[in-house]
Length: 329
Ligand code: ASP
Image (cartoon, rainbow, N blue to C red):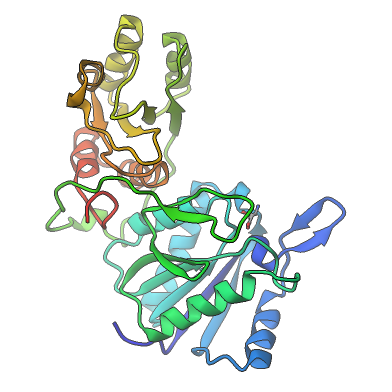
């Protein structure tokens, strides 16, 4: 880990640079000037940086897979063609954990640190966390951060593929959930999973199981052309296993090549299908376990694998292995 000499700052929008409008807070340009003025007036040592806006600036509630791919493209171009040795990504907090997870998989093998940050209150507001988060991220980069994707927030550096936003009303909005980490680490990643691989958008859906879920609900979702379905199961990976119709719908989808993955809906849970017969029966319908992965990481990983054009059986194989610390220590 070496200190940063040539930083690339990519600003995508978010509260950190928002200004008040008649409709409420909205993304605003001109953040580079504000950032440079703040760093100069605060006398903070900062690495030399190039600043770029990713247009249109967004409230991160509007992020889609297309923006994940656009961020990946900007970052890869800045590092590979522009020679930058680190990246700071400014992003709204609402979907920051999803983007951090997506970039963790889309940038596999890129040998520079990528640090995301944002803020709960806009820069310039009384008591805002914007400058502390931004300056803290810069300081972390200057003292050396490992290659890979990270989130710097509220004084801490966190793993990009493990964070979740758990609070909308406090500065400690992000947490690494206490989920069991286990699983085999993929020893060599094929080139197809590396940052050079182009991805195409994928039709993905996430569905929490709930008492009363009907086979028809799931069928309707699958009929929309879903290529990968992430089921948020109960506890250790159970579901309504007495519902033969529901299991048949899942099984038929799996046989058609839809990838079915399971996470636990318990914040501190992980999937272990064999603990209950209700879990084993669900697994027999073709579900692959996400272990202790978060929803954000599991969704992003499905996107990275299916979007790379892998066959369903290969998606399932790589999904079950740890690629960057998302499911194992
Ligand atoms: N809605 C904002 C966003 O995600 C919230 C924030 O940045 O804190 O862009």
